[in-house]
Image (cartoon, rainbow, N blue to C red; front, side):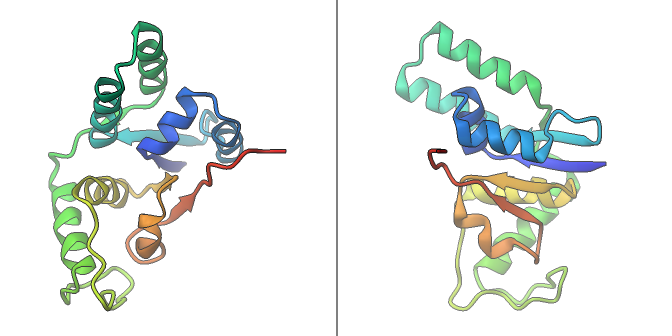
Length: 156
């Protein structure tokens, strides 16, 4: 079974039914029987915060809930996620921690935002492909997790 973690940008794209998001949904077979697609509690919180900051009305919030209901939400208070968070954070800050592929830490250090670290740690612990519109995860691809970048571009 293929495991896929969807980041906030992908959830927003699916909520808006953006062509690039619908294309990624189909290509990744997110609803397929061989795919377990889920998201992080952090992404859910980011999306809820976005709704508050932008003053979304009832209709848009219903769209948000519909997309969130489609994908299980994984909480972060799990030993494997907490451990992955600590290791990835230290590694991106240049500490010599044991990376899964023995890759040295980035030089110069490339710290990540705390929310991105939680999302990456959830994908790592869940042995999931991380699907995002955020290129900040590039540095982790092939070291800590598999990363798929989805460009938010208009389709012809």
